[in-house]
Image 1 (cartoon, rainbow, N blue to C red):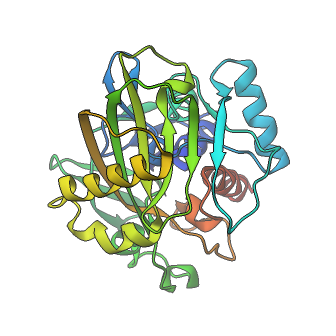
Image 2 (image 1 turned 180 degrees about the vertical axis):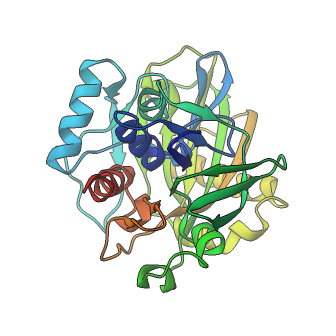
Length: 323
């Protein structure tokens, strides 16, 4: 039996798994097809694909800057160069900030951290029980597994639903609304536009990133990742599965209009809805650990909306476990 069970392979789950694995035996489960969580890479064929979640990393804290610099040296990450068009008048552009991306995809950080971890994908957690100092986990395949220590890294609404019987802390009683995001990925005819990304000032379309400009692959098409604003996605997310074509069309039409790229044939488009994208209102604590029940929680939503927040939360939890 593994000493620690971790649910989730995003930045929080992969970081805490990597830290704990230096001292304990660890096993990880995730309902997705692969690692990365919110930093997933949608692979089309071979190396071709889209960063359809986290678009890039811009390290802020001293510790995370050191971590990303080390991964750049190891060629896990690299700097995304090019012309990034900043069109927002509501906030000031930071000319110095770096856009750091994975060498092959933005889930490269999770892949790197989980190299030595026993990972089980396509494994969705349905229910948890606590009995005789052990955690019992029921998965969607009907299997019931038991562990002494349990770490959860799921979005706040999912955590609240699955663990409210076991966590007696004020943070779980908070009422927060995590923002949604809708991503549309498109392949269009190649054009002379050489811009790497756009940050728009629009009520519907917030961002567009040119995947070709990341220099990971060669494609006969121009591949663009379009991401909505939080406000628009919050209104549309509940019916996005049924309205994928309509929502994608709205975003695509906005893209051509706002970027001034000549409207051309769409060879294919994909739509992905992120129901629980991020939380912009940080908590007073960075993570949660119950030493009696051996139950821990770490996630980006404790700290803020950035991917870095999940890394910070995981390190904070590791310190609490190690006391």
